[in-house]
Length: 139
Image (tube, rainbow, N blue to C red; front, top):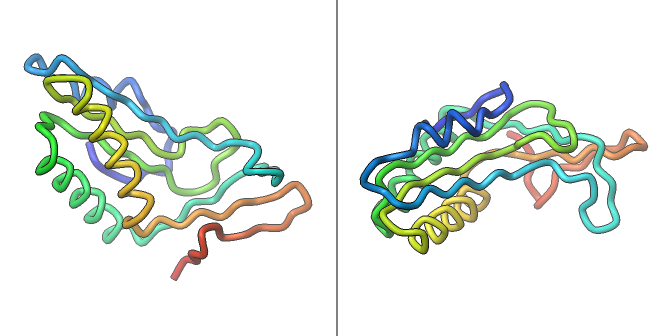
């Protein structure tokens, strides 16, 4: 279960997709839209991506994590479009034999997704202004 979606992320379905009877650990990370970034208030975010490339990069990140940890199953789902405060923007789920591996792999996947996957985030403020954050803009 590695894909982009414009629909709300079903974290329960993602957990079910990565559970495995050979694994004693399942870790789920949910990245949600927060209202404050420092002192800046956000009313909503807009996510955009070049979907074919972004989905390929998501698969590459999962494969790399699988080389570093004994992952049995991996799920990465990222939202696109307009998201309100509290919405789930990204979900990462992994299963491994033991918890330390699962936590480390999930953190690595999330950090690497933010670094390498071409998904752009626009923060929208109460005054109507908007800014593409982290120096990225859509193509």
